[in-house]
Image (cartoon, rainbow, N blue to C red; front, side):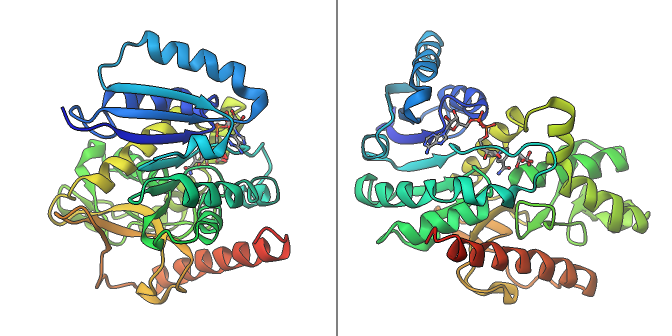
Length: 329
Ligand code: NAD
Ligand code: LMR
């Protein structure tokens, strides 16, 4: 057995965490050989509920869980963390856009960014799920003095999984037959699920699905609006699929990516594809053999895609500017 790593999950008494924590405990996220110390952070009013979650985690008797700390003190919650999975924040209700949450959730990521910088392990990686996740991650990054910008991430893998599922359904293939699906930009209704580079059984999607009208319209809007459709149907936002996408994201970040493929996660833009540096922007990403990640370079972006990517970049700039106007940063 390896030395345990420390994983902090915020919002640990919430809906997503109720799926996520048990997947971490089972080894789905860090692998079947990797023990974990769980540090569960909540706000004070949720501490009773969190105690119940801790009881259930203990009752699940996971061999990989080494230790559990439940706390509402961020300094204690992030102590020694190698991974911080920031789920804790308010979900939107029907009729809202995710960016409408910025005024409520944004400031949480200032305090947490500072607490991570002061208390986490030197190799900490910070993965934001709580919405609006790209801009919350930007706030955490700006608040966490001394932590390199390439350690911050925000989740667009749920969008990638949704897009793959839509394409597989349309083509009558299994979802695992769909590869190279990049989500560009914001986890929002401006995101661009890029069908132009995606493949089905190694062939361009556009050769397998010849209904261009569907690809350019219904496909994109279905993926962009999927979160809202789930809220409408369930009366609550996606939780189990979000937890599963969080597992997929971290697994992809710690595992070399299969040759030729990529996955989606928002990272700090280095200016690739002309995207403004510093924005937390979802790109096609690969994990290298040494465990570091890179943005896939050299993809040809056609005029249709350029327009879509520009729209989602513009929205992320607006969110960044709103952070300043709201006095969050
Ligand atoms: P939830 O309301 O069930 O749980 C959120 C939990 O966070 C609550 O228990 C709450 O007490 C806790 N919390 C609030 N502020 C906190 C703080 N400062 N520190 C620690 N904990 C805090 O919500 P949920 O369904 O689990 O969703 C959580 C977030 O994830 C929402 O913002 C939601 O919109 C977002 N989300 C993102 C994606 C994505 O793809 N990026 C997908 C689904 C949901
Ligand atoms: C999702 O995509 O399901 C989440 O971001 C929740 C939401 O508000 O849509």
